[in-house]
Image 1 (cartoon, rainbow, N blue to C red):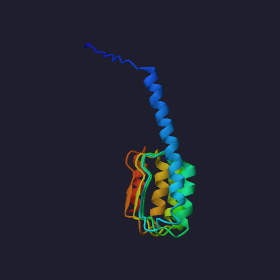
Image 2 (cartoon, helix red, strand yellow):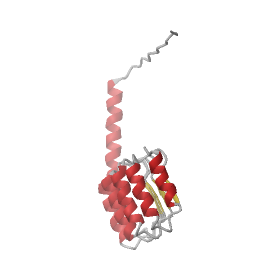
Image 3 (cartoon, helix red, strand yellow):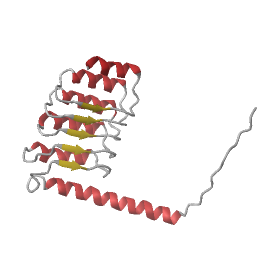
Image 4 (tube, rainbow, N blue to C red):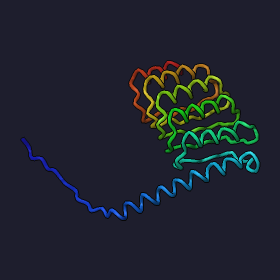
Length: 185
C-alpha cells in the first residue's frame, strides 16, 4: 500500500462579515427584481428600437418572464436577442418563453444557459420550435436536460427550418440522446 496524504484546510470565517455580505446580496437582489419590471414596462412606450435584451445573472424568474412576454408579444418592440443565462428560470419559465417563441416573429437568438429548465422545459421549447420561423440560435447549455428532452428537441428540429445553432453542452445526455439528434440532421 502506498502512502495516502490528506490535507485539511482551515479557514476562519467572521460570522458578522458573512451576515453582512448575505444581507447586501439580498438587498441587491430585491433592487434588481424591482428594476427589471419597471424597465420592461417601458418597452412598450420608449424603447422600440431595442434589439438586444441581456438579463444574464440578474435573478430573473418566471414572474419576470411573464412581465417580459407582454411587451414582446405586443408587436411594438423588435427584440431580436434575448439573453437569460444564469438566472432562476425553471421549467415553468421555459414554458413562458416557449409561448413567446410560438407567437413572436422577431427573436433570432435566445440563450437560457445555466438555468434549471430540465426536460419539461426543453419539451415545451421543442413544441414551440415546430411553429417558430424566426429563431436562429438557441443555447440550452447546462440546463439539466436529459435524453427525453433531447429526443423531443430532435423531433421538433425535423419541422423547423430556421434554427441553425442549438447548443446543449453540459447536459446529462447519453449516447441515445446524441443519436436522436444525429438522426434529425
